[in-house]
Image (cartoon, rainbow, N blue to C red; front, side):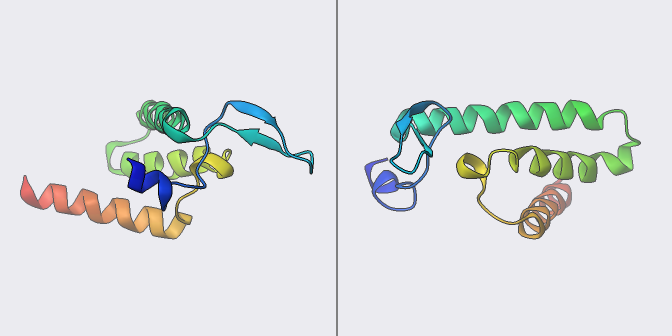
Length: 103
């Protein structure tokens, strides 16, 4: 974890505001607490996307879930943006196809 926080995780933050920068922008919590907050929000949004897609016909549910989840994460770009929409959708479709091939 120390390596993660010292490298690619060094600029990542959670949702709890810890203060205000001189520019007026909020400061957010980092470290393990920030990691826990980001992961909790990702799981919450995933459950919401899953449940929201259940009303769609089964062949359309995967696509609906992926788009719904990504759109929801874009409400919190400072905390949750990792890749662009196209890269995310392509990655998740590939994962889904690999899972289906092994079943």
